[in-house]
Length: 271
Image 1 (cartoon, rainbow, N blue to C red):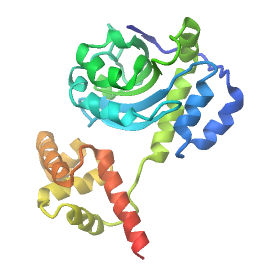
Image 2: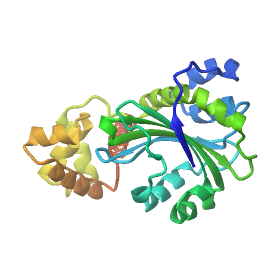
Image 3: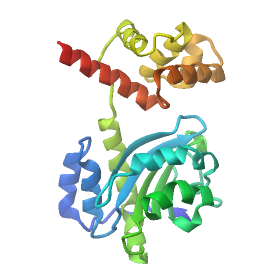
Image 4: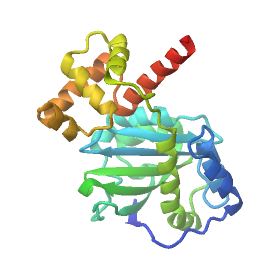
């Protein structure tokens, strides 16, 4: 496994003719596969993912796609969360900077990963190699990672491929971050009363505190912000959040947004 700092040099996109098409797809359903197709001449990969993890945030898969293989990115994500996530130090590197805003690059093969990680994530889905760019936030307790995966049917990544990734990685991360922001589901503008009704329709057993926490998460408040607003301790807020999510049948904040957005769509169709 190798870890090194991202370059600040300007990217030279070998597939420059594809760049306007890729930019035009940002926020759309085809962005992920278009990204892999655009990269293919310089950096063949069959799947990719963008996720956020850290001590201060719930793990969230923000974007993903596959090309030329069945799309298994979400299955891989759930397998990762089932165990390997808690013990994964592969993106932290050895002695790398975790200052807010710093970016690190990683190259790893499947056999660099712990046995559990290989067994649950890499082997079932034919993933053989990973290139990553990681951006650190909040003084090192949160990271955003863009991962490109070579699958077993593809040739081994060469030094040329890795140099291409080193050049393109910061631009790729910026594009993927913008795509995730535009593609993320958002609840339609609605007051707390309407949102509360939608949540209670899904989970009538929600308590007053659980509902209050969910409504503030839907406003975009952090856990610390919710704690201050409700005069609670942050660990207590997380307890109410976890109980509410269990009742709602979800695990992460982005699923809460998606749930309310789905209900908004149902309301629109009913009209």
